[in-house]
Amino acid sequence: GASLPATPDPRLWPAALSDEVLVRIAATFGTPTYVLSEDDVRAQCRRFRAALPGVEVAYASKALTCRAVLRWVREEGLSLDVCSAGELAVARAAGFPAERVLFHGNAKTPEDFKAIRSCGVGRVVVDSPDELDHLTDQRVLLRVTPDVAADTHPALATGVSGQKFGMDEADLASAVRRLAGRPDLAFAGLHCHIGSQVRHVATFERAARRMVEVVARCPLPVAELDLGGGFGVPYTPEEPDFDLTGYADRITRALHYECARHRVRPPRVVVEPGRAIVARAGVTVYRVTSVKHSFVAVDGGMSDNARPALYQARYAPRLLRRGGRTRRVTVVGRHCEAGDVLARDVPLPGDVHPGDLLAVPVTGAYHHSLASNYNQVGRPALVGVRDGATSLLVRAEAEDDLLRRDVG
Ligand code: LLP
Image (cartoon, rainbow, N blue to C red; front, top):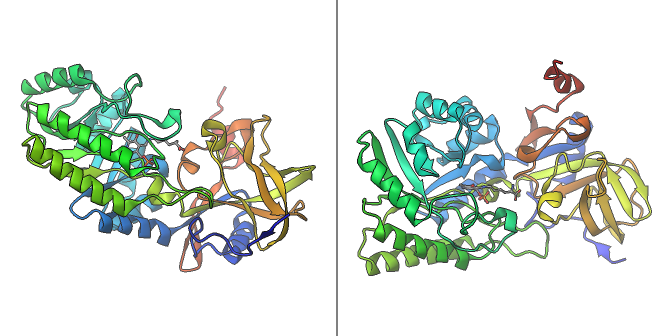
C-alpha cells in the first residue's frame, strides 16, 4: 500500500489534540472516549462572528449539548438555538440568559410550552399556526418552507415542500391572521432552515432570495430574518472546506439586492450553525479489539457514531502514533448488526493489531448528541482539552446508570 503521513490533516484535526494528548486521555479515561478541543470550539465561534459582522450567530445546541460547551459558546457571545425543554434546561444550567435563546421544534410538547413560559425565552420559532394558541406574552418568528432543495442527504433536507418542517404560504397567512388578534404576541420575523451539511453557498443564496420574496408579501413588518444553519464541514481529506467568506459576501449582496428590488427594509439577519461550530473540535478514540481479514473491529460503533448507518457518512480514521505502509481495511464496531461500520475501505497501517488506539476525527457534532445505549453499551465520556490540560466534561455511563431507569 501507499505510505500514510505520520501527522494528521490539519484541516480535520485540531492541533491541541496531538497523539500524545489522545494516548494520555485513553489511558486515563478509557475507550471509547469523545475528546473535544475547547480552543477549536471557541475559534469557530469567533470565525463566524468575524465573518458575519452585524449578524446574530446562534449555536444550534442539538449538535452537541453539555454545560461546558454551552458556557464556552455563551462566553464567545453567541445566542443559542434549543429544540426541547431538556436542551433549555442545560442552557439554563450553563448560565445562558433566556433572552438569548431561540426555541425551535415542529412538535412542541406541553412540557416544552411550560418551559418556554417559565423561563421567558427570547424568541420562539413557530412551526405551525396551532402553536400560537399555546404561547402567551412571547416574541415569535414564523418558520417558512422556502421550497429550496439542499445539496445534502435526503434525510437532512428540511426546506423542500413535502417534508414536515415549516409553513407554506397558506399556513403562513393563517398564522399572520391569528397574530393580528393576539396583542400579547410580538411578531419578530421569519425563519427558514433548508437542511444540514449543505456544501454550496449557491444553495443558501437561493433560499435567501426566496425568503425576501416571502418578506415582501408578508403583511407584517419583518424585523428579523433567520436563515438557519446547515454549513457543511469536511469529514475526509477529499472534501473541500465550506466557503464561509463567500457565504457572507453572497448572502449580504443577495439580501441587499432583493430587498431593494422588492422595496422592503433589510431585516436583521440571524444564522444558526451547529455542526460548523463543534464538528472539527471533536475526535473519538477507540481501542482495536480484533483484526479479522480486512475487518478492524473497535470497542465502540453505531451507539457512539450513528452517522454512517443513518446518512452513509464517511470518515478518515487514523491509528495513533503510526504512519508507514498501509493496507485498506473496513473499521467496524462492536454492535450486533452487519451495518455497524465506522469507515469502509480506508487505509490503515498494515500491521494494525488488537490494543492499538484508533482515532476518528470530525466527531464533535451529532455524535455525543445522537448516541444510544444499543446492546446495553454505556455512552462514552466527553473529555475537554484546553492548553494541554484535560478535564472530564461528561462522565461515561456505567452499568449502574443503565440499570437505574429499569424499574420493572
Ligand atoms: N437550525 C435548525 C432549525 C435545525 O433544525 C438545525 C439542525 C440547525 C439549525 C443546525 O444545523 P447544522 O448547522 O448543524 O447543520 N443528525 C444530522 C444533522 C441533523 C440536523 C438537524 N437540524 C447529522 O448528523 O448530520
